[in-house]
Image (cartoon, rainbow, N blue to C red; front, top):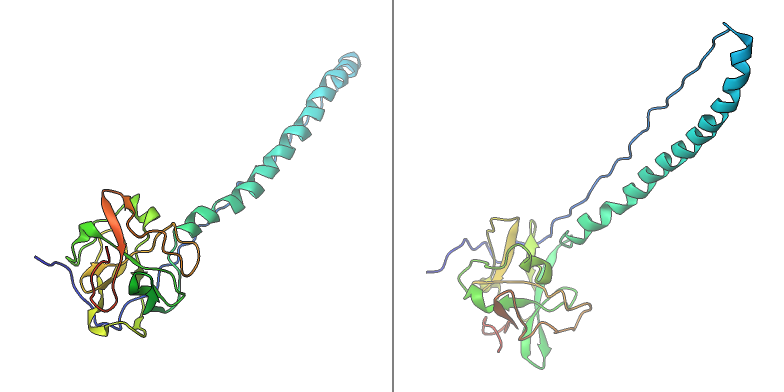
Length: 207
């Protein structure tokens, strides 16, 4: 049984942007003073004992001001790395040694999971999505050259925005690919399944 909801072929595609906010902690300034004019003799001895604490206080306050500055820039990178790319998404066909396969508008190779079985339902969730990021969308997806627009649509996911699909196959990127033209995910076995590029003309995985 095929599950899922297919959207109109030209609907789909912009990734989500995620951002993180980090705030520094303000250390409340503490101040204190002692004035006891009861005796002149005791006043001469405290200065010798008060001198060490007064020098220790500035040294502890200095490190407290530095952590907030380091915590701020450290928070955005993790959130930013998980964010899908923004902007209109185009799916097109590209001639390769595997035939004409699907790529995005930048030329990055697109993959499918054998376990998805063209059932309009993704089985890649959780840690799997870090190695095989889904093609998420909350905007428009365009069918470029070499793509059958009737097969291009979207499916729902329980863990985020809608995902682009082609002829029932949920589409993914491979974290192994770092530049346009890379096809390092073809035939890779991971996360309990095998990953393949998809034939743009047949709408099926290429073994």
